Amino acid sequence: MAVMEVTFASSSLKRAVTFSAVLPVDRRIGPGQAADFGAGKFKTLYLLHGYTGTHNDFLLNSDIAMLSAQYNLAVIFPSGENSFYLEDEDLGVSHSQLVGKELVEFTRALFPLSEKREDTFIAGISMGGYGAMINGLRYADTFGKIQALSGAFINIDIADAKQTKPDGLSSSAYQRRVFGDPATLRQTDRDPRFLLEQLAQRGAPIPQISQCCGAEDFLIEPNRKLHQFMVDAGISHLYEEGHGEHNWDYWLPKLRSGVEWMVRN
Image 1 (cartoon, rainbow, N blue to C red):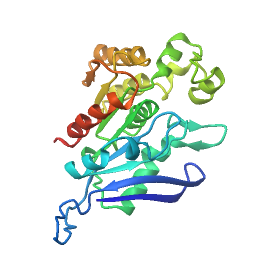
Image 2: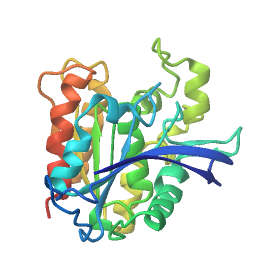
Image 3: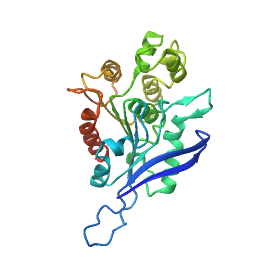
């Protein structure tokens, strides 16, 4: 098992960025035995943290390293800051391009990662769940599966109301900067429903989707709206509610079952 932190010059953000990675390159090593490095190219999960988080959140709060070894899965942890993994037009930078294209290309050049769509996954919690859904759909040719855990789909309420919805965590000004004009948000690629419609209209492959949110989570209603949209549109996906709040107690078992679902052929 190798755990590392890597810094590289990102053209997407126009500065140096840092990400963490876990690779089970020697997972079959036993006491007193030489390491076996012949595992081949790894299936890969790009795992996105939530609002106010960092690229080390999953390493500090979950058993993802154990899951990496158990399922022979490379896991890459980028930092999204508070960007919702979108572009910032004022700054001329794009966290979307970082996680959906540049980081994939860089890590594939750096590590022995499979380049197959069916071996490449994206997932996240809260803001990262939104980022995983949006960028998994924007880069549907790259990612074969998407998992959104308690996705922060606040854009859906904003788009449907055609006005910002300050919530104590995000202000009206912040929501406008992140999502753009509420009056036109529904018809932009910052709304997952629009992206799903565009893929369906083109007849393009839609990644397999797994979505979950706790019934007591403050984000449950927009998650239900997105789920119902996919039901009405006939888009195959997995959806789960059940008891749970917006915390690691809910996310940990869902992440474990999600990883098992991702690596399953």
